[in-house]
Amino acid sequence: MALKSDFRRAFPGGFQVEAAFEVDLDCFSITVLFGASGCGKTTILRCVAGLEKPDSGCISADGAPWFHGSTGVFIPAHRRQVGYVFQEAALSPIWT
Amino acid sequence: MDWEAVRLSLKLASASTLLLLPIGLALAYPLAFGRFRGKALLEAFTSLPLILPPTVLGFYLIVALGPRSPLGHAWESVMGSPLVFSFSGLLLAQVFTNLPFFLQPVVASLGSVDRRLLEVASTLNAGRTGTYLRVALPLAWRGLLSGMILTFAHAIGEFGVVLMVGGNLPGRTRTASIALYDQVQSFDMAAANRTALLLLAFAFTVLACTAWLRGKERVWR
Image 1 (cartoon, rainbow over the protein chains, first blue to last red):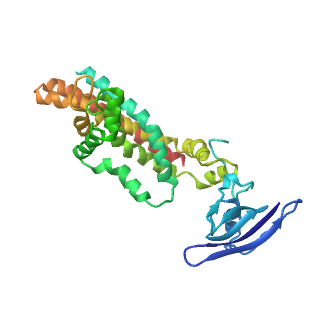
Image 2 (tube, each protein chain N blue to C red):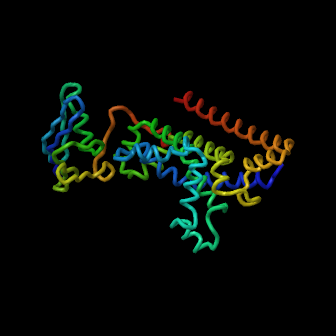
């Protein structure tokens, strides 16, 4: 499986996060995303997981589009095969 | 005391609370989480009964449910009797009238649910309906309970809309608040006093319960 991303996400105030990368996920690997606080690491992960919608560009997994800005394709988070570990524990008091 | 009217009030209030539950929950979702054009209009429309004179609301409900309206006509051809001045017509009118009393506490409670928990649910493959029903609503149960209590209480006390849409038919559409009006009209002050006291005690108990629930919610957060 290959994850291909090339998207932009703009925030009010002119700040913009741009991401263009390709990750081969066929074999076990660890990819580290690093950068200064506030540079957009979380935004990139949230866009890949489907928790946030980029403004333009595309994200695809194995050729299947997860997001495509010009055609309006947006696969919601619950239909993407992605696990997401949140920065702080987010445990529902009802289910724990 | 006109116990028949009291019984009818209780029956009407219970039925309208039950009927409002699925309708209200379907409307609460877009109002709490939706981002779409026309959200302000939907909000304004569902809040209308709060400030609209009950007579205006009643008038439009008569028009909407009357035999000349598509709904009223279809009802009459299937059921054989008109929808206005019937218990069923009253029930539909009550559902619309009580919409804001249900929606406001429910939407407020849903709005204060931690968004991260909803995001966690969606990354764990829960769809929108699943996230709403199994994560958001259980966490907003106090708002849901307040909404149901307020709906029930307001349905017991509604006067203008019930009089406009239901008329004043003993056993069918004469509720306790309308019986009180009749008692005053016929100078039966002793009976009016008993009915008024019952309605007052009920309303006070209900408000005390919802205030207590809200207080609990603040303490537990």
